[in-house]
Image (cartoon, rainbow, N blue to C red; front, top):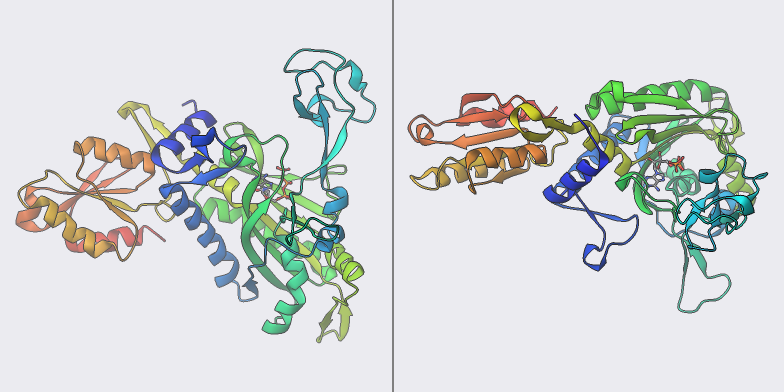
Length: 441
Ligand code: ATP
């Protein structure tokens, strides 16, 4: 099967998972909108992440901080000074490139001798210029110095600047964690690969505060837990998940150790989540810039220190693209495309179909809909042939098809069709809820 990103993009649009933003105006670069199925799938993934991070961990709590924050936060974090990419422009055709795309040695490259990959002109390339990835905005009615704010490029800083307040209100003892899901914005120069790299996206980050000497142990623990989330919770094939360690030169300025979890996308292995040992870099910088003491008082050891932070930082949209890519299956034998989503994250759990639109079958099907609807998302469909109805739902990733036929009217049984195998069982109406619910764990 030739699984390409183009095929996934097309299915996502047709079925209502993801649309290009502002399409009727010709689109808006690197921003996407999530349709009826997409928003359900994205919310399901996010709620499993939230559940695993907060509900089942006694020592991790949630936070929802603002997108706009004090601009000094971004000076302290290093984003104002360091968060940029070197860019070159072709003066002939105005194309813009990230310098590292055209040369492995940005510093020593003879940029005036480089040929533009788009228009083919040599000698028109500018030298690299630094381009900051943060979106700037103005706060207040007039543009004046001091009114500049930034759309946050990561959610993590909202956690660092609130960590003492959270600790104070919860009385949590180290080690403890704070989790957050929220939008982040980066003015990515080269945005590509659908929802993999966009200018507006959602992050799911958890910052784990530990005693400095326990950092390696916490790092090991979180690497294991996070990889299990992909294979066990989301049901992604473990052959498509791997770790990549950041070596010298790749490590961010704040990190002592960093690992990416990568997924084998149709366009190659790429990062979906980073697990970083950020040491006390962030808290030390916020102490320096805010002038506030951010040390934690450890009652057991009777000492004050800045905790080390182990961060797990995932992109929700990238995670969803990994889930979609993993689920995409062309069943050539049966001439259909199936999204083999795990039932627990599937946007719709079952489609209920009256075989024909008469003889009381639609009413009987509606009665089943009424029983199931309070428990999970389902769909009533009586349009077109039964085969077509099933195939539409195969593309939507709906795991079950329930058909009400003439026998139903006699003995209160229905057929239950399984999406991946197309196997059909005859079951009692009274058993439907239990059967579906037990597959959602
Ligand atoms: P990349 O190297 O791919 O730009 P990064 O190393 O800058 O990513 P982090 O700053 O570690 O990424 O952000 C953590 C996570 O946030 C990433 O693993 C990714 O899932 C997500 N993410 C970062 N930038 C984007 C983006 N532009 N669009 C969608 N998701 C993103």
